[in-house]
Image (cartoon, rainbow, N blue to C red; front, side, top):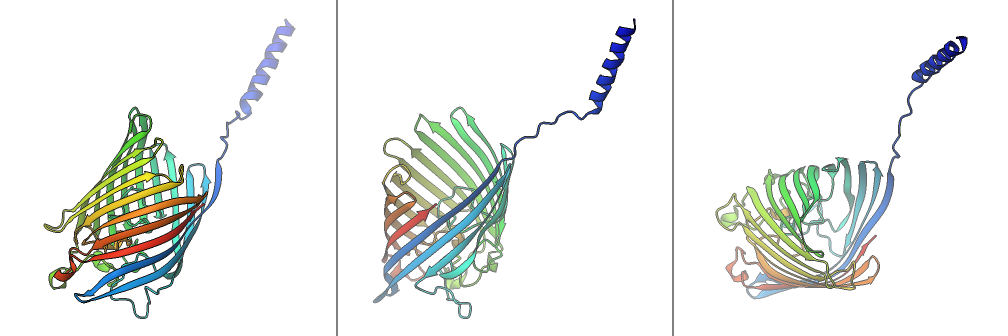
Length: 368
């Protein structure tokens, strides 16, 4: 009888000791990442027949070089990044001692500045939170947002993926303040939806309706082109813009992309529409050659001009065409030839409205 009792006591002691020991806890492996990225642009530009008067025109030539390095560090669901923007141009487009009466460019031609400084958290597969100075998370065309500018504030993105033909559905909310590179305290509010559908094996359709509101626009430095002057110099301060982008992409043997963007500034009764149409044939990632064509017609009050593209000379109040040939020279290096014609259709000078300005550019772009 002593043996069973001894075994029972031994078993109970072992069980009690095991209970006192902490249970093994599974420690998931942390995922670290480090990335150094850089993109650069080297551009020679010629602008011809700039209107001065009905009998006088002028030309402009300039060189621009830009390098933007950045570092990204990832730890599990958090990514932090910082980047710089270094510009040099043959012209001096801004002088603090004597700023120009009107500046069309969204950059200072002789400048080194902070370009990106952000944190991005993805606590769940359906949620992304961004804060700081980051890349615009909504896929606007350049009519609404110049890709060289960064919103400074915060953004929330709710998304779901891969539900049959619905490849992605996302809701984005954004608030930013003071996002221009020059003096600016403008508030920017964005609410956007994105739905991307699969059309067969190689085609996608993307729909992006958005609402963009700009407030406190009077805080913009007076030399930044906000929009085009109205009667007696009165400038619109209200911008409540409805914007809709449709993109069709075909990734077959010959890649094709078609883009249509229509916007309306609901805060004004007239001159508040914008139209942007583009076609892209080929790809510089999978092919050697790419052809681009863009047609745009943007009314003078369609959007806040300070944040639209600066490549079309006027940001609002113009109509124009742009053609581009891109060639992949080697991996990460591409060469581009760009030709544009555009007219200042809403000029306060009637004699200028049918005058076409020509712009030509050759560029080398680097992306690592």
